[in-house]
Image (tube, rainbow, N blue to C red; front, side, top):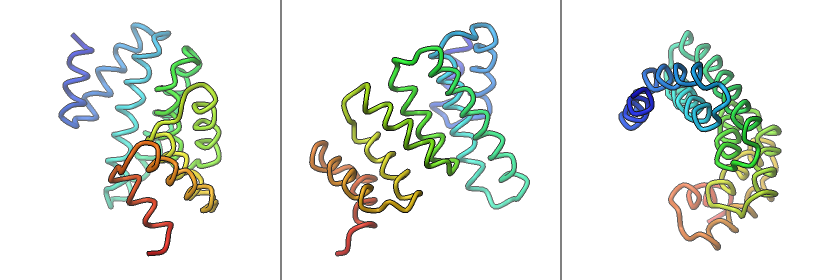
Length: 164
């Protein structure tokens, strides 16, 4: 029941509720990587939504939520180190919180274990951009567009890096 309610809350962008439901599940099953992944995702989405708010108190809260999301996703990755979806989510959480060097390491770990995806290449490109490594970002984005086709986010990021 908690899982169903958690996914329902996620589907409706009710990140506070989703985090609460998955947190309850995580307390009951602390070694379940999938539950910790879902908990981390709910916290990450909550942090991203808080980050977009202009109120300083919410910005401080976003930092706390990013930290909690990263901790949950790290625990999930530690519990199931072969689940690359968790690595992808952890990379996104790290990049979204401005920890580009750590995000880059996680995206590279993903690529050592699994074939490239458009999302991972785009995420790694975002980490490269955050580190000021624009040539490497452009290379990843071009590879993503060539291999996986025109995706709106990837293509928009590539246009930002390349002159018209």
